[in-house]
Amino acid sequence: MILRDLLRVLGSSDRRNGRNLTHEEAFRAFDTILSGNESEIRIGAFLIALRWKGVTVEELTGFARAARERATIPCRDVSGLVSLCTPLDGYDAVPPLEVAAGLVATGAGARVLIVTDRCVPPRRGLTAASVLEHLGPGISWDPADAESCVRQVGFGAVSAAGMLPALLNLRRVRSEIGVRTPLQTVEKLIVPPTASVVVGAQQGPVLGTAVETMAGLGHPSSIVLQGRGGGIVPSLKKRTRGIEVAGKHQVPLVVEPADFGLQSDQEPELPLFGPPDEGQGSGDNPILVKAAGDVVDAVLKGEGGPERSATLLTAAIVLKAVGRVLTLAEGVDAAVTSLDSGAALGVLEKLRARR
Image 1 (cartoon, rainbow, N blue to C red):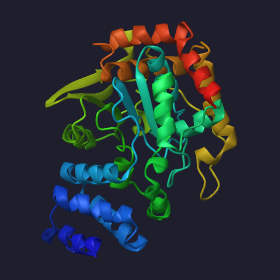
Image 2: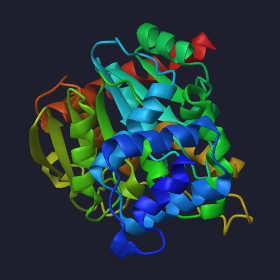
Image 3: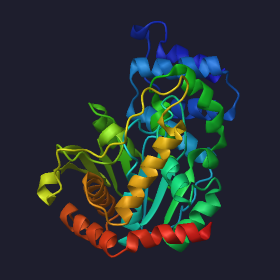
Image 4: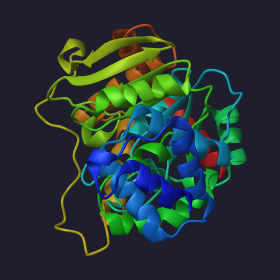
């Protein structure tokens, strides 16, 4: 009954008579969605109504807090932790280099937790989970195991659905809706509230909303970046916009690859094998999964090219977000050392040994 009442508040049939939800209303709405007490039809209508209206910071923070309360989140008291928040439905032709960047940042002294899942609709694209599955370590469905990885090795990757199984019940709704809704934003914010955060944001005016949401959630520091495909990996062809948040302070962040000698006319890409079968995506294609994993493996083993450059830039952003370095230039230097010394590859080998 809660969603039916709130749909009236949103003015789903007459926008002029609707209004935004308060933080408390948004919290109750998402809590009831996760409880399993609402029909898929009503949940879909609610999500579409929000997309049509435009979601606010108060609504997003309310949704995220409801999800966090129901989730089993690891690493709540792990110091020096940075969480990488990227699209759970993945990428179509972009290699998920946040895996390589996270391993490089760990080799440079950071503690890294990636929140991910595999083949999440509607895109069903390539994610960190796809890459880690191919490389050997895989991801942890058990939050306690993910925390153990972080404490022992410095790097962990946890399934969002493992932390919050109710997300699995929303997969069919996501698939049927077929367009982005606030759910895509909320699910990647199920992270330890004490962690520093690097969050990917879509292009356009949503950057400000994403930044205000991170400020409202109270993380010690965060960087919101409009990376390729809505992720955290910056472009090598042009500057990438972002904003750094520390408490109440917000500072524009511009990632200009030419400043670090990393500019390229070519972006990291994956081969194309024609359109996917109906209902499938890149993450279902074993050839593309292997290609993405091989890209990360090659970077860690010292191969050059745009994949290495993008990994170094992303790792520098991660290190800056968690306070290991003060500037991106220092971050790039630390990332180069981690990669060329074999420290990053050593992290991967330790993860493999745990399995």
